Every structure is written in C-alpha cells, then in structure tokens.
Amino acid sequence: MIYLDNAATTKPCEQAIKAAEDAARSCFGNVSSLHRLGIESEKLMNSAKKTILKKLGLQGEIYFTSGATESNNLAIRGVADAYKRRGNKIVTTAMEHPSVARTMDYLEKLGFEIVRLSPKDAIDNFEQYIADNVTQDTILVSCMAVNNENGFKVDTEKLYRLVKNANSETVVHIDGVQGFCKVTLKGDLISLSGHKIHGFKGIGAMYCADKIRFTPLVYGGGQQKNLRPGTEPTELIASFEAAVKAYPTDLTHYKELNGYLRDRLSKMEDVYINSPDNSVYNILSFSVLGVRSEIMLHSLEEKEIYVSSGSACSKGKISSVPDAFGMNSERADSTIRVSFSMETTKEDIDALCDEIENGISRFRRTKKCRRK
Ligand code: PLP
Image (cartoon, rainbow, N blue to C red; front, side, top):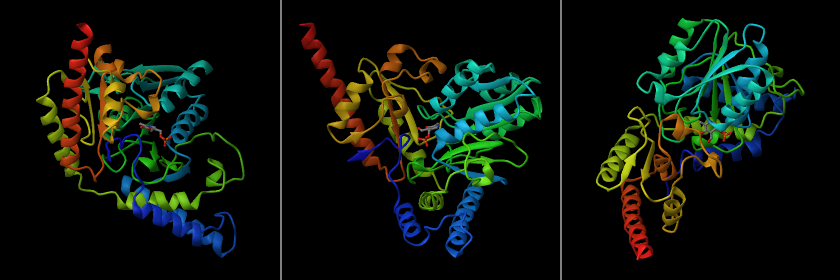
C-alpha cells in the first residue's frame, strides 16, 4: 500500500499509540479529582500543554478540544461574541476549510459583515492584501496558515505584524492545522489537530495568547477555565503530546520528494501543477487534463495507491478553493492532491507516476475507441 493522503489524515505513530495505552492503564484519573490520580492526570495535561507551546514557540494557554473543527468554531464564534460591542467586521479568505467558512456564513446571518478575500487577487502578497482590508471596526482576521487542498502558504508572522499595524485591537485567528510542526505559526488564537501529525482523531487544541477573550461554545463543569468544559480526555491528550514530540524537525525529505514529483510530472503531457510556488513541500496538487479526478483516484486505488481528489472534507461538495485561486473548471475537475509523510519514499513517487502515465494512455485509448 502507498498512502499519499496525509493531508486528510495520518497514520498514528507508535509513540502516540504507546502514550495513549500507558495513559489509559495508569493515568485514568479525572483531572478535576483532588486525589493523587487526579493530580497525576493534571500533570499529564500540563506537560502536553507545555510541549505544544514549546513546539509553537509561543507563550499563552492551550485549550484541548475534539479537533480543529471545534477549535475553529470556538475561536471565531467565541471572539465574535466577546468583541461584538467593539465592531462588526470580520476579514477572512475564500480558501478556508468548511469549519471556518460555514462558521462565517453563520455569523453573517447574525448580522456580522464578513469580507472574504481570494488569493488570486494578490497571490504575491496576500498578507498585505488582508491587512489592507482591516479597518477600525474589524474585530477579527481569520486565515489558514497552509491550504489543505494545494499547500499554499501564508506567512503568519508577517500577517500578524501587518494586521496589528493596521489595527492593534484586531484579534488574529490562524487555522494552523496543516502548518503545525511544518511552518512557524503566529496568531492570537491558533487551531491545531492531532490526527494531521500522526496523533489520534478526536483531539485538537486551541492556542490562546494572554489577554485575548472568547465566549465558550458549551457550558458545563468548569473544566479548562470554564472556556471548554467537559472531562479532559487524558489518553488522547497524551497521544497528542507524543505525536508532537515525535514529529521530525528536519523536513528536507519533503523538499526532495516534492522536487522529484514535480520533475516527473513536468515530463507528462497535459499535466499541470496547481500548487502555487509559495506552497509547503508536503502537499502537491496537480491536474491531469481530460481525466476526471475520481476516475484517476479510483484507478490509482486499484493499485493500492491512495491520493485525494482535492480535500477529503469536500467529498460530494463543491470546494471554494479552485475558484479562490482562479482555476478553470476543467482543471478543477481533474485535480489530484498528493500529500507526503516522512515514510514516503522516491519509490512510492515512481509507482504513483508510472500509474498516472498508464492511466493517461488507457483513458486516451478508451476515448479513441468510443469516438470510432
Ligand atoms: N482546517 C484545516 C485546514 C483542515 O485541513 C482540517 C481537516 O481536514 C480541519 C481544519 C478540521 O480538522 P479536524 O479534522 O481536526 O476537525
């Protein structure tokens, strides 16, 4: 099996599996309990928070959530509610994950002014374009660090600086899911997810800088400062920490694989790279013109090669990302997204490219036969 769909989800690493098992066996106390078992669970949680903050290189608080969908909702709806008296405008982008985009639709219905900016309108300096749209009544800027469908990268340190220069009161939220452990992230609020970095599904986090306020989404027993109540899942938290610790820091392997794949694709007729130049190395999107994504995807699947037709979350739904990057429908309909892990090899890329070439000639032959 060749798994090239790591932007959808990753295989849990051995360290994460072991950490979850150890916690389930020996650290099962309730973080809120006053006895020794509770204190041990609290220690485990605090250690995980420290590890995540260290990886981010930031100071502040970590709130554990069920995943980045919840973190995005918590950050955006939480800030909108907490700061609504200060202003009514939110600036975001047209390439966001549905967990951000649908939350923005919801806030729009409540009366917030939502400005959605497309990378195609300022691909070379998107950070400046976003900041140029920030006005005195902008309470929030929400932007992803790395696009999940094509790897396009936003310089979040630059974005943060420019937004604060435009309005120091504007809160900056970053959907850091695809960037965490791969690029530097900077924001007042940052959404993270365990299963994209070889941790488990069902655990995520929201980083929050000091002095940033947000209203909780749910009410309960007062856990996590009352801002995200519910008994903390220590097993999942332990697995998240282990995955963060295990994630490699030297990512040159991705760069090499990316260069190798681009090189092979450049020799194929009718194959076009969709990922903008400024993209992370572990995600590469391309189109095989004339072959619909699903057809190519299932043809690769027959050889046990797993890729994506765009993003797993957009299954059956039309994604806004191609339009945000100015792609025409022919190219959008034939998109293939390949996303690597550290286990991906050049041999995997060769097998993928050989099968794409086989697929292209097979589809061409079939078309010719049909025309006859
Ligand atoms: N944001 C981005 C950019 C993503 O790629 C994803 C998942 O695909 C999410 C948010 C949602 O994360 P989760 O699956 O943890 O809810």
